Image (cartoon, rainbow, N blue to C red; front, side, top):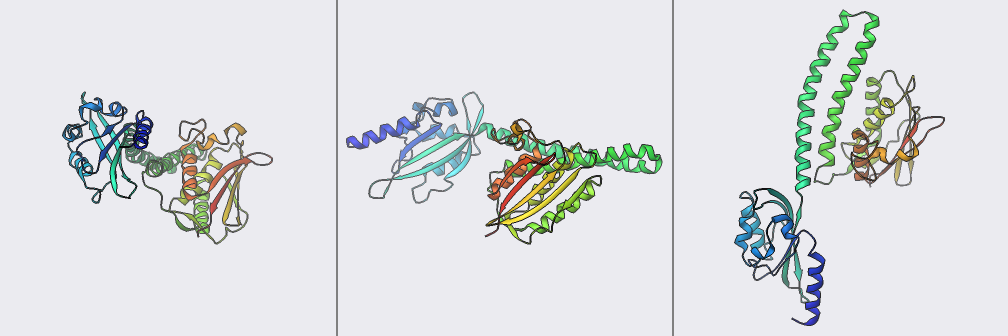
Length: 348
C-alpha cells in the first residue's frame, strides 16, 4: 500500500474514531474487520479488539431475533447486498439492550471495483424509547380517555331535559369542554402518526377550496358563539398536500377561537394566489402573540413540544406545512389579535 493510501486510511480513522460504531471490512473477507472505531464500545459495552477478527463473536452480541438478518447483511457478496439500512438490537454484557440503525456503504477502487465495505451503526435507543412511549400515550389517549369522555358527554346530554334555563348555560360549557377533550385525542393521534413516523409524507394534489370550506363549516358548528367570515370563495386550485391538510386548517381555526378573549371571537379568512403558491390568512381579534413568542408558538428553534408556548396543534400544523414545502408564520392584527399566514405551493 503506497504512502498516499496510508495517509487516506489514517484520515478515515481519525474522522470516525469518535463517532458511533463504524467498521471496515474488505469485500473478500467479510468475516474479518480491518478497522473498528473507538465509538463502538459506547454502544456494545465491549472493546473493539474483542470482535475484530471474529464475526461470530460480534453476532453473539446481537439480539437473537435479529442475528440472522445482521449476519446475512455482513456476509453478503457485494452484488447481493440487501437491507443496506436496517434496525437491530445489541445485547450488552450487563443485559441491557441498545437499538442501532445500521448502514452499509460500498467503497470502490480507482478501477471502479468494489474493494471495501463500511458498516455504520448509530445508537437510536432514545429515539425508539420515545416512539414506544408515544405509542403507549396514543393508545391511552385514543381509547381510555376518549371512551370515558364519550360516556361523560352521553350522560351530560341526558340532563338537558331536567334542568332550567339558567343551569343549561353551565351544561353547554361542560359539553363544549368535553367535546374539546375528544377533539384533542384526535390531534394527539395525528401528531403521533405524522411527527414520529419514519416515512416521508406523500404529497399529492389536493383541492384547497373543498378542504377549507369543509373545515370552516365544521368549525361554525363547533363554535356557534364565534363569527367566521370568509371574505371571498377560496380559489379553485389544487395545492401540494395530502389528506392531513384538513387538520392544518382545523387546528388554525380552533386556535383562533380557543385562545380568544373577546366577547365574540371574530375570525376572518382570506385567500390569494401568487405565482406558484396560494396564501391563506386567518385573522382573529384575540389578545395577539408577543413578538418573542411568534416563533416558539410553533415549536420552532428547539423544534419540539418542549419549546415555550408550543401547543401540540400548532406544532403539528408547522410540521405538516413544512413537509408540504410551504411556510407558516404569525403577524399582528389591527387593532388587536393575530394573523396566521400560510403559504402552500400549487400542485405541479
